[in-house]
Length: 216
Image 1: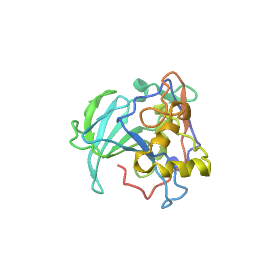
Image 2: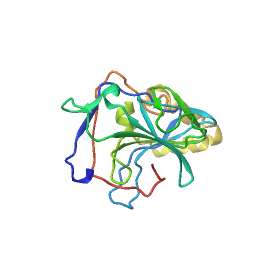
Image 3: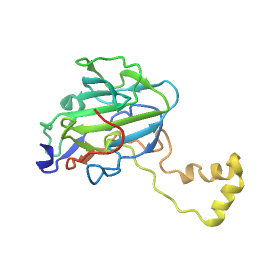
């Protein structure tokens, strides 16, 4: 059982492509207990019929609804994906990419998939998680680390500036001006930066479950 295993540092030679074009609305927040609030992956706001693409090569292990939400799960080929422990060896424990909100899946269990392959589409909401091990006792990793995404930092705004934003009403002209490139160090797709030239590492965590949306 993974909960008894000492934390392992996983690294990827370069960042993987984000599965959808959208904005991150909820970042990875590991829950502190079985039923504590948290988020085991990343949630995105997407448009209608947004293509869902694979981030890594692997084999489909599950396609179907869980709690009314359509999911697609792929066991990642760690060797082909360039994912390894900090010591350079592939992890013995299986690593899965869990995709939630995938409609009209174009693949079936047992089928091999490749990076950037379209496997379905999503509407309005999409979830991606990275799970080490089986669903019953797996640990979840922060996908943002492997995608090279950097969470935007909160910035303090003076009371006068805040009142100015509110005074603009729905036009938001003052806010739009303030959110210029000089004030948005983490702009771009998914509301974060993606650097493909960096070595990305993350630490596996003890086994926890989340009360958020079900994950296969």
